Length: 94
Image (cartoon, rainbow, N blue to C red; front, side, top):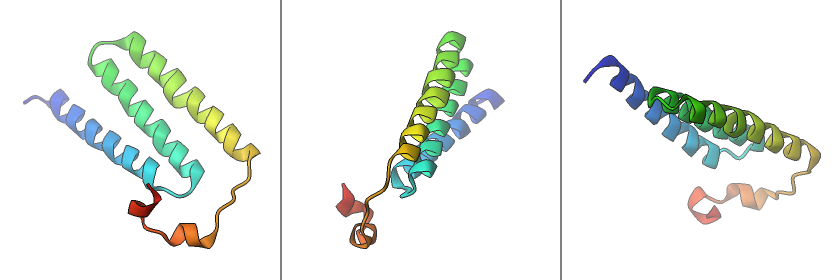
């Protein structure tokens, strides 16, 4: 196993953790940052797989544009949550 393969495994682990955090965080802006991190790591992995065109597309559309659209939508809306919804466990929310 070479050094590049170790870096790829670490990046996949970071991507999985960011995806879990994006789903579990209650703050919507933090979840968008987690989603953008997943897309950014995916674009780096595409670059390692020698697909630079796919990597650039994923970075611009997946990480930058999607995150910008979600942040703009979150800022333009209001949150309607009750305290009862926040007390429920993650297994009940699904």
